[in-house]
Length: 397
Ligand SMILES: Nc1ncnc2c1ncn2[C@@H]1O[C@H](COP(=O)(O)OP(=O)(O)OP(=O)(O)O)[C@@H](O)[C@H]1O
Ligand SMILES: [Mg+2]
Ligand SMILES: [Zn+2]
Image (cartoon, rainbow, N blue to C red; front, top):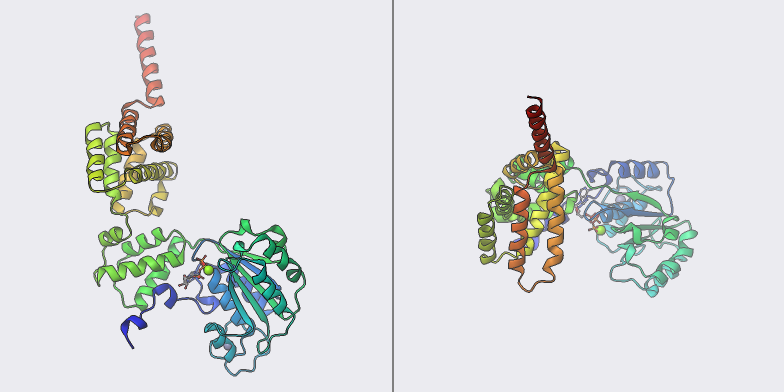
């Protein structure tokens, strides 16, 4: 087979096909397993969570579980672990089972699309145990479509199951939610992600160090799919020689080094140097607005670390940058950080009103540098106290 055809992106190649292949979704896995084992099944389920945590995968696994006939084709009840080889499992996996209807609400939002479903509900499944309707991105349905669905959802025939998935649960009407069993799929934690990506690299015969894995996991920000796409990018760009530096560069974290430098100069009131950095970046084609955005982000990072020093390990930046953040956190007070944050936000407002963005950003940087020079309220207090005690001493003498 042609290599191009054979190649499948990692996220698709490793789509979980049974519940126990899902990572970081223990509550969901346990509850669904119990429900299937005891054959206590709701008639409608809704899976919600951020992108790439397993909603669509779970919906498809569940559809297979409901209809799996077992390897000998004789099972009469739903199976926790779909066999993957019976006629139903195969047809569902290949997206050609006549009784498992998957619909993407993002492209079919209208009431007519829902009518089609409702009309089909009255007919028994032709070859499956259950007629399963999977509606992905269900929040995209129109108001009328939701209304049309309500009645069927209330009392579907016993052979019908609905499985909904959405990233935006708040856009799903409460009337619909109250008729579904709801599962909130959490972001997958850092450790689980790292372990998962490491495992994938082993399966793919890819050599990668722990620090690189850790950067990918952090940048994934809880989404397994995002992490898998990053891993894809890293593998195809590094050509067998993966390093932290390269990974940072590929994931777009490298540019931040300059911004850290800028931050440092601003905070040490090195105005001339700070402005010079801005100009250099501008000449390199960097959008000055992006620099402000990065400064804002770094300010948030520093403040977080100030409050919880340990959280520095979780930030999606290189170890050297983490060190820098910790240094800045010990140097700057919360009050100063809050002022920087305010001034940056004000700066963004100003940007929309000036004809020359670069000059506006320069002015903002200059003002920020003055904050760096100013003593913090605590320092002023200490100075006043110091002064008063000297005066008192003088008087007493
Ligand atoms: N919990 C998980 N365990 C293992 N792999 C996962 C998990 N979640 C997502 N993935 C990986 O990400 C890919 C996409 O997952 P899935 O389509 O289930 O995400 P989703 O939650 O439906 O995302 P979206 O909101 O973007 O539709 C899968 O093919 C798999 O490679
Ligand atoms: Mg999905
Ligand atoms: Zn099967």
